[in-house]
Length: 304
Image 1 (cartoon, rainbow, N blue to C red):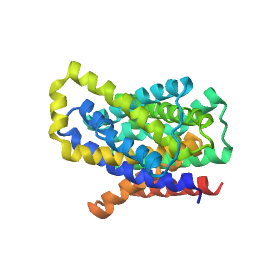
Image 2: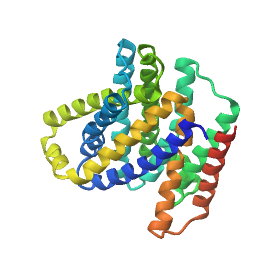
Image 3: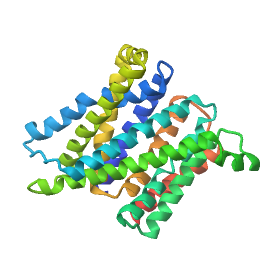
């Protein structure tokens, strides 16, 4: 198995942990605060990884340039908005539908990469992405009441629109991070995907922390107080989120964003496994079908 795939599996597992913790935080603070902890509490750990690579392992620091700065800012703001929308979905009773639509991120990322940079992917990869996306959507809506009418109306529902927009913004952020990381390569003696990813993560997370902190100081100081009070679980979100992001950035430096995001759908299998084996929830036929499709899509992606 290639390095980017191993990193993606590990990052997906960590992201599942982070998402569960963020959902817990949503009951103690608003969407802004639950979004901020991912960045603010992850900041020290992002710099720890960078220092470990540079000071501990002696890897040279890349030199930022204008192209890097542009893509880092675009990616940072896009991820803030995407995360906010995803956390906001937890407020809806039928948030599963919106979450399902947000999982169209790999397909949207592939289209964006093709339009913006001419990054084409083979039809076999397109098929693998489609299979995994359908599987994820089946799991997401398996426990909701599905009728022909509800399927039609769900496409135009508010949760579906928020989910699609979240997926689009996540796709934009992933593509931006890949471009930012690749822009650093010429400044190094030899391309170093891990250092490029770590440097990109550190810069981006500083931008995100400063922007969101300034917003809360200006508009919602009570939310900032709630963020401080929840420091224990927020620290867990920070370390897990920063580690997962470090993995994502590295994988997306090594491989196309759409391919990485398609394999990252394995996160749903981790989530589903937790609900079945930890919380002893019963499996439904649609969930089983969704799991099988995700596995089929992942196998197709790795083999083809």
